[in-house]
Image 1 (spheres, rainbow, N blue to C red):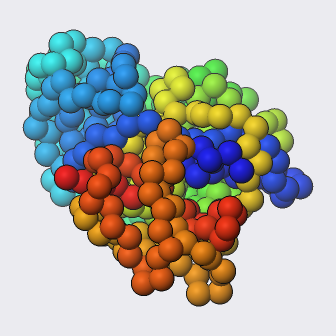
Image 2: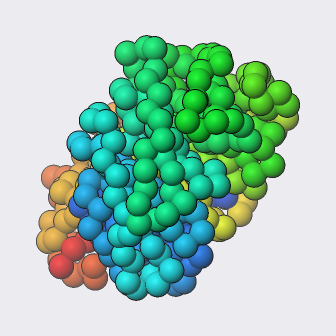
Length: 403
């Protein structure tokens, strides 16, 4: 096995044949530490967190914080032109932020919405911002004057479920909520009304760049893909099984579907006409639950609720890997300072453990029998711990070394 595959092995699974094949490796290139990132987006050469951080990723191996603004508990974020729009949790608020000077972002306007558990989805269409305002439904907001965002209409939903995501296509908004995917006529933002719905248990929604496909992430994991030939009546064309983790965010970019999977990190799929093929997975569990992921060119920004945001890139092509997760290995504490503890399956033979750095080089090895390894000599940064038997790698887990 190529040693780099220890950093982020990807499974390549066809949903039709369910077989593995040669594929890519996702590698964590850099990391931005911050406790409590729920949502994430990006623009130009910057990563934008839902907590208001503007991070320069020109060098993805060394993300640099260049500016920040206090937006509160950010539960959603979207960028349109020079402005970023932030939705907050706990108290349902929308904040408009001028990003024209990335090193000095500034809040230009704030609007408090009817109280809910939070604004979990945002979409911009012209001078109107649409906000998925949890149990309060869908809000239309006039943003023609960035200093004075104004509520146009708050459309309650008939079910007791929460609006969790929204996208807009022409005269229609598609809202993901517990009772299904709602199709809403927004031809008049002051007179929005539901015209249909289908499916159930959706928490996120995305639309392709050419407006022909829509993906809706499910609360139980995975997604449904819809055809938008008739925007007023989307038709399911196939299912994307995914993992068991809630698909809090989905994104379609350049024919790929990117899906956050809560405790299972991020999944990436190639979208075909009749089905999707899993290209790989990024395990973000050491950084807490993944509620947000955003693809930007060759990078993926992955939000971690505990430790911060990872900058992930497509890496080496053609490494054949077996399905991960069959031999679980966990590390703690994360981040670790002097001693790393680990635990693995008692049913697996192993002769020791190795620590691999981001270049794929083995920097430590030990015949650990008590589940600990001294990492005090390591520099700060991300590493992979590999359980080995001779030269065979039995299981891997990622950890972060702190000073």
